[in-house]
Amino acid sequence: MRTEWEDLAEWWQQELADDSGYAEEVLPLLLDLLDPRPGNRYLDAGCGDGRVMRAVVETGATVIGCDLNLELLRLAKAEGPVVGCRLPNLDWIRPATFDGAYASLVVEHLVDLASFFAGLAEAVRFGGPLALVVNHPLFTAPESGPVVDPTDGEVFWRWGTYLEDGYTEEPAGAGRVTFYHRPLATLLNAAADAGWSLERTVERGVPTTTRDPLLASQGHIPRLLGVRWTRGEEDF
Image (cartoon, rainbow, N blue to C red; front, top):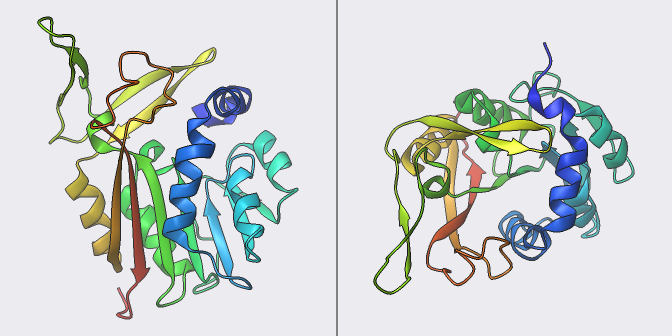
């Protein structure tokens, strides 16, 4: 059974080419949270075309990427070894294979959050980090969106159904892509249940580089969430 992401390679590459926010906001945040160490081996869960792999490899680390889109994997293999898989399935990895793991703008497209965190906990050695950058849950909630005050033009953010799990389907080239929404508590608790210990969280506002003129000056509205955990020593 094919999934929507298997046909979106061209759209994804065009999105990143047209949006400087990824290179200026997402990638630096991920690298800061991961803090890759030379000689260590990391798993890129949902590596896409390998642009994050390239940045991590440039620090002297080794990276193995995995993704379900074969077209993107063909590009990513220029940066290191890659594996075709459908997340959250990480059964192909032997326990404690990696010194750390990361995922960039991936979690919000996965249905099974618990299996994702559990699989990563199995793949990463004790004490190893997990770094995630995701679209902020405030931003992904169904029915959420910008609201303009007609009296002075100030932009606010409508919460929508933030406290409930849900999803939205957004246009993606000729197709659509699904964004799964969970409240922040659901995300953090799922990681804790899998044995990940929270070290750091970072919230970033709407970047000045956004293509949405309505939000361009609204840096106080949460747009990105970054989290760093370490693999606990208990056997979960």
